[in-house]
Image (cartoon, rainbow, N blue to C red; front, side):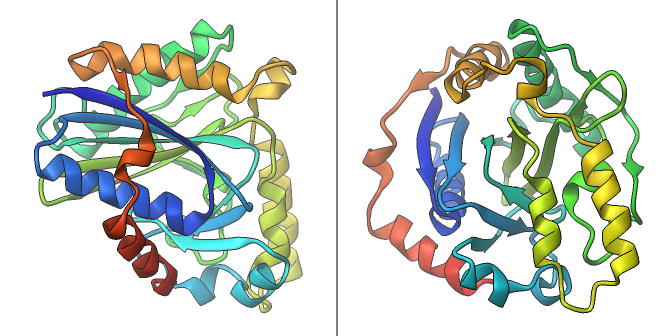
Length: 268
């Protein structure tokens, strides 16, 4: 069985989530046993968690009118603004050594290569086994992902969040999706919260999305997407069982991907 890496470039939200769902199907059919995918977003997009109510989290009409995207993730978690970042996905069998065990154990396992990749680029980071919610609990509506710090998520030694991630397990397949911030665009989501969001809550969220977030270019203004992409490739190869083989993602484009894109488009 092979461990592979797809670097799919920048696409819209429906394509991005459909591609991850397609990778889950391929893995379930035993085509590969560990997949790393890295990608970006064009246009900028808000993704919401699998179980979230769209209307409680985002003003979709305004978002679309301004030319941005909206998509539902197959993973949990809360709303995220995707723009100046490198997004990654890990797809593996749930019992693969790299992600096996409880959710907490799996998160700890996938955090380790993330930390190693950051350190290889000269960026010192830290992880914590506890959750930290800056603005309400995990089920609070209108409360974006980057106002909280989940278990084993990667941040800075002073406690700011640098990587946001969410996970799912479905029919024997583990999926983790995460955002590695190069710049802090998360404040933009405040312009697209539901119209009944109180001004007081917006003030609180603005403070947390300013003070509680770190980004890579804060530490290295010259760092580029491919620097992080290459570091992840090398680091995740160490836990995948085999060195990750780069494969052209275009070979997976076709009728099934288009079907999944349509499903994503209708699932908001």
